[in-house]
Length: 210
Image: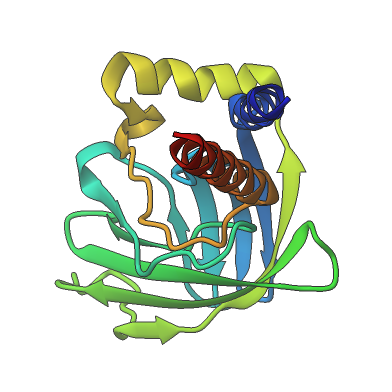
């Protein structure tokens, strides 16, 4: 009976992992719009395209091959919501922008609160440009989770399988996790412990009989 329970729990856990796909988070805030995609299996960021606009200056950020980098700012400490991440991008020869995102839950399971920091540095200014100071902004807003079509998931998986990267040269980076075990994992651990305890009792009983 114990073996059947363990096999059933393992099959259930496998089916949960096998169903992992991609989700899209739409960004909305006074200075923030756009979206990003996340791989739900390893929590990597699979794509992004968003705009920071303070009413005078607008910056669009999206993967651009060798001119964009993406790194993780910290570990994720739960099993839900978007991964916390940061982006560094060279918008042109003279402009560099950096941004990090942090997310916290709301009463709606599909909506997450955003806190972020955006900075832009203009290294050189031609006289005819509209120069801007070195900006530091703190956009806030929400990220709303949406399911994506299978075609979108296949598109990301194809690039990842063929090149080891996501589209447009976005590196595949899975964040280091420090997560709370899922109920299915806890169940497997409990079943395993029960099995070991049962085996120990049988072994002890056998030794006493001798």
